[in-house]
Image (cartoon, rainbow, N blue to C red; front, side):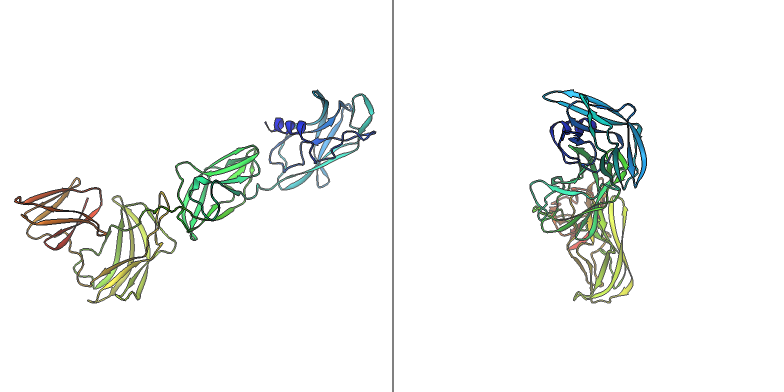
Length: 432
């Protein structure tokens, strides 16, 4: 395919790789050479020159490939002629095997003088022909192509393509790294292809994400992720693309659904604290939680860790038994500590959770009535004519229910998670 494409270029374009006159009267000058115009990212099967007019070559004629003054390959010369609107001659150098020339070097095609001549006038032949070309050590870095936006307002990853100036293919299963405000937040699978001599790298279908308006992002294509299509040993350099998001719709909320201190009757000493999330999350580098007094002065900062259990993601920090007394305290999750791990990139806003020291949210020990949760249904018995309020743990009301004249109540919970049930002015934790 590349040979045909190059030949068509030679038929219709007079390129400047070598002088573009056909015959100055006594010497034969080629119009075009198949190497030299662009870096060579492919194995070398042959080299050909195009001439204006019918040509022939000397019996047993050869030409060579030279690097640093040394001949690295030699091929035999053949001639062919094509008659269309004019006669065009092709002198080809055929190698006994396909050449995989070492990368990162410069080469010359050398054709001795008099090797090629006009078919109807053997006295008109070529001077020595020397055409230089390079086999690069890499395919360089990619350029960013955007559709319908610019780097100051990129809405979605499906608007962006990384472009190389040669055909490309994937090396293994490449992934790009996405940074949000300098924090690595995603590994994105890539789709690698090419069209019309250009390599194209896109975020793979199904991994498209929206970029939050006004937020700074960096997309990094690691070195060695993509190769030249026909030389897998010639790969890309690291590419870093900085851009700003332009997606103006609200991002999904990243908020906890429960804290391990809820329901504790005495929290005058703060040790290990855990926050539960019902969505896939990750932590920012060096993530930590803060223990503050009621004036939000930091008492202690503790490293945050992430674990997963029973379909929930748990962020934990150990404050080592700090005594806070009866005056109360606040646990702070700094903004950007918790990051959504799938879908659009969202982070938590600064989250402050106050505690009164000796009074937390009561636990699930219920005096005077019983409360069970089975298969997504909350069952309460031993009550009559009492309002029961159901909340998510972040305070959103789900509903208010009353038993009327009955002594029991059943409530279908909307989804798996942790809830607060308020009965007779007290709050209880339930989960399924």
